[in-house]
Image (cartoon, rainbow, N blue to C red):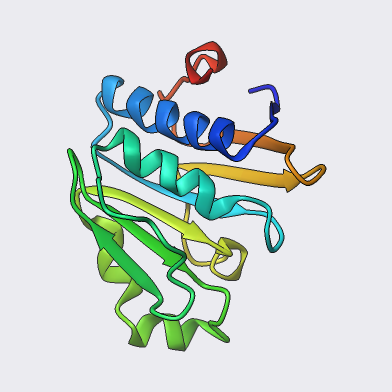
Length: 153
């Protein structure tokens, strides 16, 4: 998929929203989505839009200090932030692996910390270009899942 350039926080949210809607319309009821990018890149902003597409009305915040936040919508959303995690044992003790088989979407910020242990369905890299612009690269890793980039705008 080509890289997507957004010019505002609202555009990044809209891409996230349209992406979740497209997954649902394609018949997907679960998936593991890695979110990569530096601090302030817009990972949580993307998750806010994704959650909106699932009909989640709650305010989405970064779960940095709580490890995971669970939301209920059309499908469940499990939002992980592994920024403060130091090793795989800590992740296991917190029950992370139990979420991977549940119905719903698992979105994981700082997923590079577990890439040797978990196979994602989708990998999303968000790069901060300027104060308002972001480059979003969506890599589909699961067989049979095809997303036409035009539906995300």
